Length: 418
Image 1 (cartoon, rainbow, N blue to C red):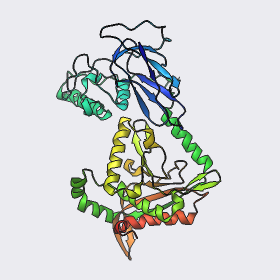
Image 2 (cartoon, rainbow, N blue to C red):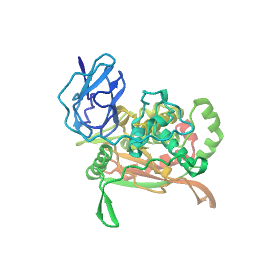
Image 3 (spheres, one colour):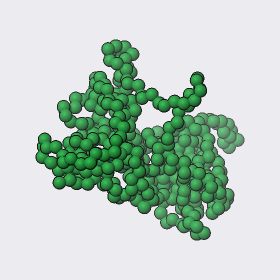
């Protein structure tokens, strides 16, 4: 008796998915809830678990195939231990990846029991495949020894240090597979297809430029008061709430105050209508191994600063591990992006449709400014607000940004609501 492995239900906004990686081959034993295959969509990577204990039978969708919701990916043969699965028609031929070369275990690596395959997060799995590394040699720090991307990077760092003198017999990390190069001699070119996420991001950015009248206004903010507040309370805040007090919570709460004063900034265009949202779902742009993603913090007007910081930390971890859900990536009424973490001093962010505005944060840099007729050195940040000029007037955009500036330069306004 066999059970079907099907594509899980996809949201209405996602038409299909691409089969990214099969982690089992026909004839391999599998356990219930063990991840069989990764499906890549334009938003996240989905893991498809085995519905039963058994043996993987025929694979119906090979890596690279585009599949739709509820399509059959393969079959699991429910058989006793040691039994062979019933014969089926052979699957279409497919290129098998080269077997991974065994890598020397790192000094901190935990031994993996013989015959037991370690659990690997999608981002880490892709890195292991690219570098031709053995997952059994890497110590996983996740739940039940799950290997994350950070574990792979730590393992590579250990190998590099060992190769530089601590252990001359330890071989260096296996090189990535040679890319397929074209072009003239001495002028190589490499053609690499976009990932679905990158293609979707490109599509949305072009859509935003074509369908919205984007305009950007700028201002600058003196963050001396915020820095002093963080310095005074950061230890107590972390001890009380179990999370560090960052800058983003100040900006999120300041943005909510400004959005409540200027509701059109929180609105969106739907055909000939303007939809004013009575809630504040703010997208926080975070980087991931697959590109930029914007998970949504819901009901930010009801969240404390600790709630905001905890939510951002959780999003960051999920983004690195490829565990963000569709629900966490859809919706949103306003977005914030922080190019300052990469060193950006000034930029013009692009709208995230159907939202009508996005706030860009930048690098904090000490600069001389005039204050009451005197020159002082202050930690300054440039702010940028890109907005849809179809429904937002320049006056409203400028006043919105001034509201954020005033709140951040006098954080007591957050408490007093003035």
